[in-house]
Length: 241
Image (cartoon, rainbow, N blue to C red; front, side, top):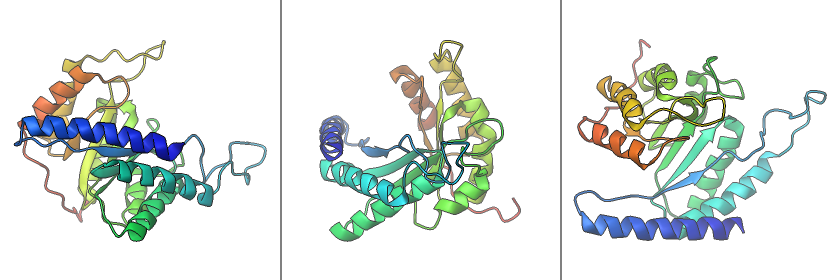
């Protein structure tokens, strides 16, 4: 079931991307196969009374991710995006599954990875700082590393700034449209969000920008217009950071 869902979804997205690309050869569209974190964590117990308990194993995650990767790749995606990472051990299972699949099929696609800073502590849910997260997933060549979800653009900016100074990879940001209101809805307008994304671009912090929760086609359109006027960030390590 997981294979078929991912295969068909990727196939549909690829067909649409190819059609739109054919209409404008100067602006090709690419399909990123999204690989989420699952609803379980491999490095922490869900039971406060049993801290040693794990609801899922690394091997279980590997098998699930391997099936998903197969469906996405065979459906035609151009790259893979391991996203909304709240537990780096989960992400490592996904990355291992990707590498294993690549070796089996003797192929290679670009890989993006995007973590989630859960609150003002500046850490992922499993407790890693920006720097620790970056180090933990930089053992394989990545197209990009970044953050998405949980926070709006203004809240994510300081963490993207830290990341951009230390990583040799391209950086990405996909913030929410602000923070949710009391009803769980997102009130930030496309214009407001695009203005905040402009700051990332002006400070040369990112290579890839987009949106997560609460964003609409209008949000993405204005973000794309802002990004089109900017020069790409040149990845480099700042040894004085």
